[in-house]
Amino acid sequence: MKYGINLLLWTDTLTDNQFPVLDTIKKIGYDIVELPMFDKDVANAARWGKKLDELGLLRSATCAYSPEDNLISNDPKIRQQGINTNKKILDCCAAAGCTVMAGNSISALGVFTGSSPKDNEWKWALDGMREVAEHAQNVGVKIAMEALNRFEAYFINCTTDNIRFAKELNHPAFGIMYDTFHANIEEKNVTQAIHDAKDYLLHVHISENDRSTPGTGAVRWKETFTALHEIGYDDWLVVEAFGQALPKLAAATKIWRKMFVNELQLATDALAFMKEQVQLATS
Image (cartoon, rainbow, N blue to C red):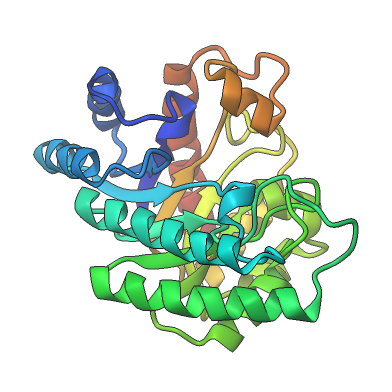
């Protein structure tokens, strides 16, 4: 198993000021850093890739999409922009050496129509993502689609829908991600969801029910790690936690109170917790 942490705990931009954070992540003992790809700057992503090569850190990436990049918009121009944005982000991923792009690459965060997904939206998503997945394969990156909870999105909220989409898309560069925060809200049976995801699972986010230090809340951790062991998952576990340090991110993730002592405490305790749970599940 490889262990990682999302840089969004500290920043949403890739600047030289964050290089000391990478040193800290490496010193704590992480194998992977997950990069926010919001600025879509290929040259800067390549610079970060060199730095991460020097540190010997593996990397994945994540992003969120705006109403202007929505693959299921009624407006064909916006859907095309969604395709273009996805391709640009994938170019950044390749430049930085990220092997996985994790997140919801289809629908805009926080955009709702007041109803469940329609057949035409499902078709638009498949059509757009098919082109995006081809690009991903060409640049050597895999897409791990995330099911977001119903309060953040209305398109693909649970593992069942995520698997259905992956089956219908049927592309080697496209799979799914399992996120414990969203699953804690949406899944009736964590064990069943993970077992069902076996053939499509590319990436796992370890995130507490209140986005704080994993292991301190209500997520069904024993069931989660046991199920991952049972399906033979031995890939990447990446911590996703948020605080109040980034006002825009705090507003987007609805973090209104202090959730942990500091970033160092969370990162250190989270790694120890994941390793402990993996050991318990395999013993």
